[in-house]
Length: 426
Image 1 (cartoon, one colour):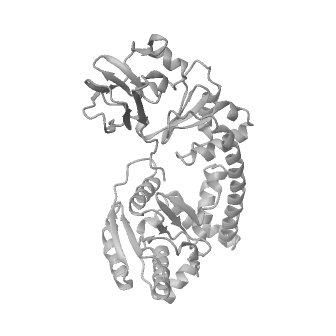
Image 2 (spheres, rainbow, N blue to C red):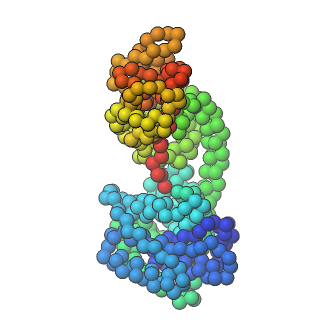
Image 3 (cartoon, rainbow, N blue to C red):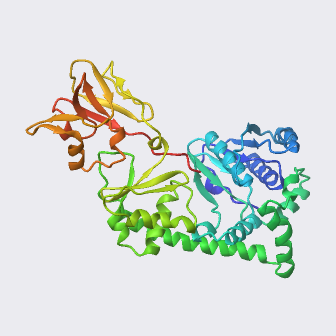
């Protein structure tokens, strides 16, 4: 019924086991395969959202099913953040829990089927989603340190129901699935039955359409990779881990190619903006050269500085701590929320790390004492880096500026590993 060959070399298999029809069939299929063939260790994960009283009985049901099949079950309780979309918030909490559990190369199996694919396409069409959103749910994608796999995507829900009845499986019927106040339930319970009365092949045709859209998106991704190769050139080596693109290279593309390459680049970093918010890109791109425009997105922000656009998220959006004494300069010094620094050379005296306050000066070899602000301008240090750029002091004397060899004595160089730019996007 399903092909599991692509995932046989994974260190471990996990299944998202809600106890519903889809995941019950998938669990039974995986367990049956594991009995007949050599497979990675199989584990089940049940996410308890606590959103309805009936859900309190589901972990016990899932445990009983797993015990009969000889499969280890892990029940994970999550908190669903309040917001406009309960469905989205529950999904975010669920997948965040999965990412915390699966290890490098592990595979998490989920039970989406053909009708889920069709419903997703129709739902996103009604929301006016772009091509990337309309593309089919992939059979496999990266998730955290491992992968998410959907081996049932070519199976219809009727096939799963028939399999469950043939094998005497018992599953949970979630009462919230009948609540048509949720958009997906309305499509599933009210819209799709009407469509299939008139067009019996509607689900299959919509799922096939999603596959075609996925192929088209794949071609656009290849174009985006070519455009990115040019735009990523010239990134300053002084700020490792900071993602940036050359603004002139982007501006030289047509507006459609600009959006395409940015969607590809941003999709790995943040949830993408809808069509109404793409005006933020035009404002960022076209702002006067002496301004510091910002495009705020869901999981971070884009800034412009010295001819490049820069992606900031995670610790980069948090304030730095105050001055910090360096009692053991022979070992790296962690900076709260700001990475770490390491010293090359051994200056004597009372050393500490501080940040710019304004008015700093520095002795530069062959140039005498110079204003730090002017020196940073000469070296084209991005404006957003300057407030968190570590400065090495001995008492009141500024000795070195991190990652800028020209702004330090030959026997006193400060190397900074900037903070992470990650935000844990699913």
